[in-house]
Image (cartoon, rainbow, N blue to C red):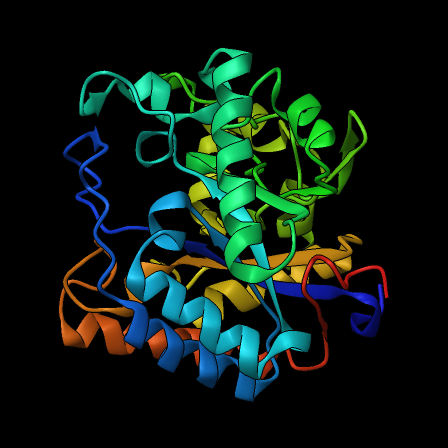
Length: 315
């Protein structure tokens, strides 16, 4: 595939701040990173990025979140998109208890009527503050379920970004995406663009083999010789994200996905990572600088791709 045909969208999981290892509480809805998010995104836009803010209820309802929305709505209408990101624990209607179980942190595990009511409330709130109804969705914790795409269709959504290729969250009662690669799929009328995730190795053709078909890695892992081969070839799993991955790793994955014909890449991170001391990825100023530099280096290296929001991706 010619790189000029490949699209790239920057998708930000735009959300509240909470300890990822300490459970899910409705009261954990603080947003204090708005200024840092604006500053960082201005630099990304200057590079040529197009940004999708996938926003949850806590962010949109906060003062700092609304300041972020107003800033980009005023200054960058053509290069940004406001989308929906459902964190059930901070989205009305609320459960009777402040804390919810991990199973219910995945929107797709909720009863259909509750999932729809929560997403409807989020959709209405985003429309109130942005001036339009979102058409792109990202489930919190990538947690789509059996009713999710039906609900998305009913609420007017067009695109879902929740699939994480080659990944199974079943160990914590989440969705199983192990049978998906990075190709787009249509599910119940919803265009599903996976969060770009795959494998890299020392040999490009072997990297492509692993990324083409779900199960290729598992087959090798099921034999002693296969495990030895994987180790010798330095196989590792990579997401297009500066959260834990460097620009070189992301570049190798990008090259492989382009070679095997993937048409739309998703570069992603969490909004609160742009401020030191909130997420595990940027616990201090040194790790924050590394995160920023990897993001800048990667995006500078892929300027030849077609940078798009999801709403403009068909253009």
